[in-house]
Amino acid sequence: GSALTCSLVGAITIPLTFETGQWWHGALLGLVVAPVATIGDLVESSIKRDLRIKDMSNILPGHGGLMDRLDSLALVAPVVWAALRLISPVT
Image 1 (cartoon, helix red, strand yellow):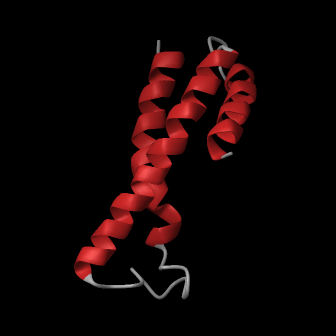
Image 2: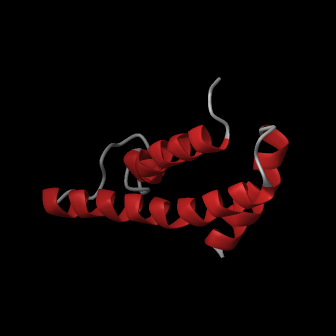
């Protein structure tokens, strides 16, 4: 469901945001983002498990800490940045 939603949102957003962006650029980006976000979450959970800690901070108690809200972005941000550079290169 998340991969389909990411693809749909990307297919709508990329052509509206970038002059050179095609709908399929956004759909492909969405298909890439969904598994990369999941991998980011798994990597962060693995680090916490190795450190034997439940929460990375007390800012958001019961949610695994602040890092549990940002773990997916740690891997997604560079992937999206690279993809957007390909879709709309800086001139």
